[in-house]
Length: 268
Image 1 (cartoon, rainbow, N blue to C red):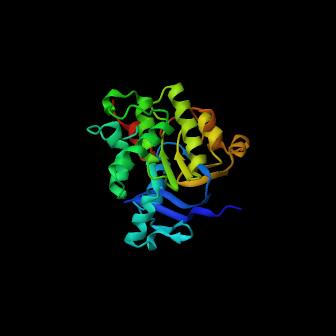
Image 2 (image 1 turned 180 degrees about the vertical axis):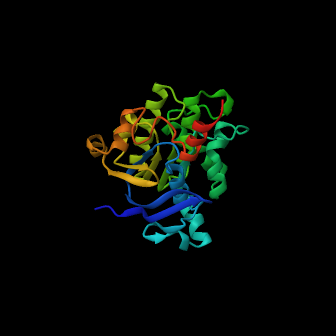
Image 3 (image 1 turned 90 degrees about the vertical axis):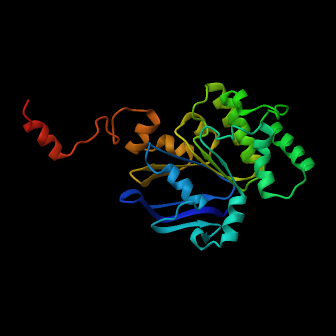
């Protein structure tokens, strides 16, 4: 049996007076690929920020390797983040740096490697995403799919133990989307990393992940395998998977009774 890498234990979190998560609990096993799904505003990206230590829960615990993330020393937190790779939505390449310098950036920041070694590693990572030979190009010269692949090469520059993907398929055409999904899956297996992906994409995601966690109303509505989510009778999951316009997430935004009364009694 694999051991848990990340655990959420009854985690609650709010931005000021706006609650986002309510007693969320789940476990992500080491070496597994997990997709976090749910509607917009359900707290998916907040979960990622809690995993990185950018945010701290109002109550409950985020455990990494069995240890509460809040108890990490500055050095432990630095080392944890050094072992983490993040692929941001739309890639987030440095626009004034070449492809080579973008991929080399984490190597220069977090290692003492020579430039010769960095050059070899950058070529290796670009080759892993099928883009070796474009080192001199600037981000403005890349297509959307190429830019996302360069960002993926930068994500794996330090061979991370934990990879976080925030909507990696957003804005891609069907071919580029399939390529990124294939690369993400292959790289996750090659590195034997623990990966967490926030996504709205159903078709591609269910083909490559081991576990799906579904959020709704700030709570975990479902946690299980891709096959189990296809068979669940949860109305929240059913509406999301099938893209239905009405259901638990209502088509009409609910108005307050006082506003309705005002509208009914307002003079023309």
